[in-house]
Image (cartoon, rainbow, N blue to C red; front, side, top):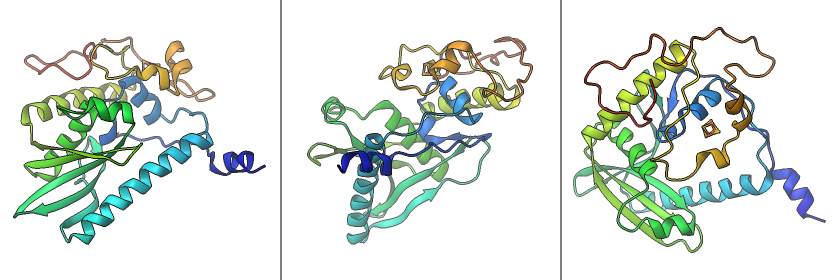
Length: 245
Ligand code: SF4
């Protein structure tokens, strides 16, 4: 009686926005998914259950940020990174403890993944935090994870990792050239360092299989073949996406 109505109430169309920049949250994403998202390819609507899961994550963020405010240690919340040609993003919260500022990334995590995060944080969370540390020029931060099943908390205090930041920025400079300046579809990714199979949850599988470079119905741009006129400069550090030329 109510379930069908609630499903309908929560489900929604995914907003599509053509853009010429990356989001910090895309730092470990498949480069082809980034291409399709940035070029405004359509996505299937969000079903009610997934929308409710996202709402639970948002509520957990708010609950934790409110508590940090209550402790009087918040310097800024939902802080946008300074304008730059590569990334847009907002840090969840910046706190001050014993005279030092920390960028705090709050993550709500599936119980299985939470159990995997004992010795180290997830790599995508780590890289997102590193970008915030870089853009805010803050030497340290915290990944604060909450188990979705029982609200157990776990934290990882990490310092800025300049080598990793250089590698990420170099990779995304190359990706920017391929996607936004050349209008190319990145080559199929090397999946060996993926933490999970992104293809399994990808909303763009059909477009990727057909290697579309323009949304269905849009006028297709003429694009050169992979690698043509695109060469890594000598001495460039290895990128996140091996095989990206
Ligand atoms: S299907 Fe796989 S390789 Fe293709 S865009 Fe999606 S995640 Fe990337």
